[in-house]
Image (cartoon, rainbow, N blue to C red; front, side, top):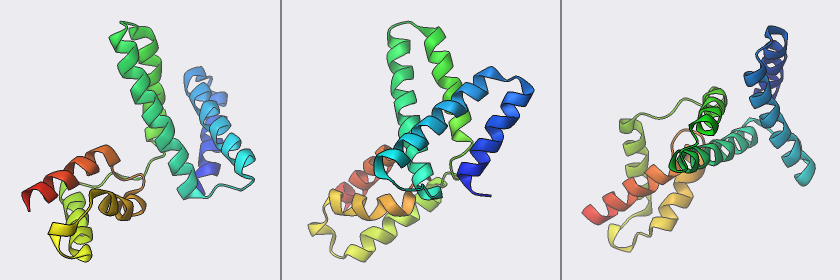
Amino acid sequence: MRLRQKITEDMKSAMRAGDVKRRDALRLLQAALKQREVDERIELDDGAVVTVIEKMLKQRRDSISQYEAAQRQDLADIEKFEVEVLQVYMPVALSDAELDATINEVIASLGESGSLKIGQIIALLKPRLAGQADMGRVSRLVKEKIASN
């Protein structure tokens, strides 16, 4: 089953169960997916759906930190619940060892470490790690590896 269909089925299940919070979170996701389809005049595949979910997760995490800084725990809790719902549709995250191996592989494929640029490495890693790793964390790991060479 495609990811988009799974989201629709889960929303229907939440509606039947009377789970208003989950239903609303899934409706937000479906609205974001539909908006992207309309804007770009395409039908989203699973990779594009994951990209939209990643963006929504980043927005929610930013909102959580801002709400907590403003001492609005009620709003932060809503965002945390939405993160939990969205996280279900993300691919399984890579372990530290797998992430480290992927970064080393890309660095080795580029050759001499003296001429490596972080942007080049990240550009090659981003499509390979889509949805499986936090790119901010990946960027920090790459910087550490280059600095240690």
